[in-house]
Length: 440
Length: 183
Image (cartoon, rainbow over all chains, first blue to last red; front, side, top):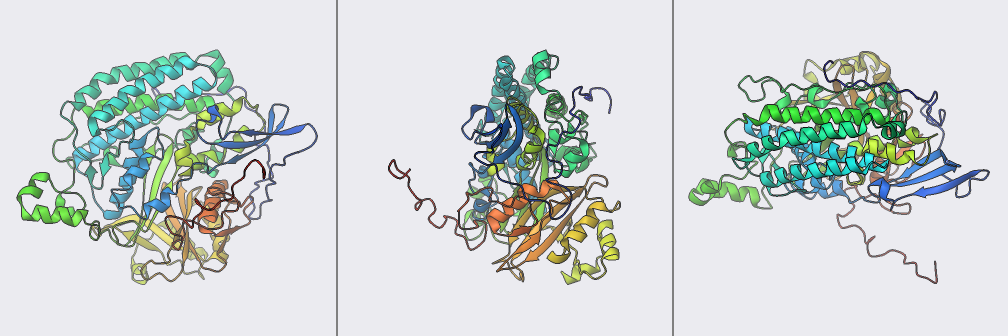
């Protein structure tokens, strides 16, 4: 780690941070957690925070037991946005489900699409084409920037710095426009299919991405100048919501939250996929180089620093890839029996027509092997994995989404105990909890 | 699964488990993709009454070193071809030190599906176990806060079970209505 690797040290770290050291002690029969009482008695009082609170950025509900303004206990209640996405997955086929994944992390829908089809392709045993891999990598990194821009901006908004939010949100429009040009939708992209993409990009698209990269880079610089040395922002975030490295691992944290606590884990490096793997195009190309920013503070400030640096790295990855996207098809050969054949083949050859109908008829469709597969991608919030069990039918037998938001949010009571009410929005913002993904 | 046992090189963790717990049949299996290549995903089976000691060994043993519990989930094998047990509680483990994964399955059956909770070993098991309890109705013995998490208290069913219909059992139509007089 050198060069731009982020290192941050925090000044004001509470000595014992975990409010209930014994409540979750490491023994199989841990003591039962008492529910929050309506009238706790003494000086303590109970406040319901959410689920309709603007600062929670979603339908989150916290039951807080307070001593004055200090939080003694916090019990999150989730599930307000539960839509049964996993149940739906058992009734939709491998391409139809991609529409549902858009609705999970709605800050970076493209990353969810790609994670879903990474898992599907692992199940089917398909290797995407080099062109598809390059485009998917670019889409995934654009989605990461899209997510981080809002996360950093909204966190600044929550501590009163409206400017940074508007700066970030304004530049997100560029990325939305790029997605619109590439796949026709700004927000719910649904851009991938099993073994490829919905469609190839228009020829001028890489040029447009390249034109806009300096603007996005400038935006990251501006955000950094606005926030990193901003005394109000630093005072509000430094030392707030601290979690150490070992606790972060034990609590199953992934993504920027874990990396801000010094956990060196990035699936792009540790389980390389797409263009992050060596020889990704079959012609000996090396893996796309990038650096994994690590911070050691473990507090909200460190999480913002990691996110800022990740945006730079992502933009750099796009810059490295955008000039020479390999030529060829974005979809795997029709012989793999997963994608629809080219329209010319459908209209002008009997084999193509048969193949097309085999794919779209409800009693035919996909024929995956019996078994199960887990595929994961490093998305903006952490490890987004899909665990698919197949019984050989056209729809999965069981779909499990391993949502980073759920795993990152369960540590929230530990992070917030002992802090003030006004710190809630800071810690929530730094964890970047997305209710759609949290509740599914 | 029996024929896959002859496969020569299981990961270190499986060998360590076999050396330590000679009396358990772990029945390791590796899922194979459509092109015949293994996916590198090794699943071991552990009976529910031995789960805690096996998991603690996997967590503490330096050569296994599974320090992160990535996920806890469950599969209802009610209509699955050739399945003998109904619920397969699936633990997805990750060793950051060795950069390896392992999946542990624990099969339980009606009428009282129960497995021990892993919250004593990995605190991150808290919410995923609550989710499995909520959506599958599997009890996690020793869980500190085993309440429904996605559906509401009083929701009678477990929606991810295979015998629960996609459109529900009428929960969206039949619910108590509170008006001004009764509230």
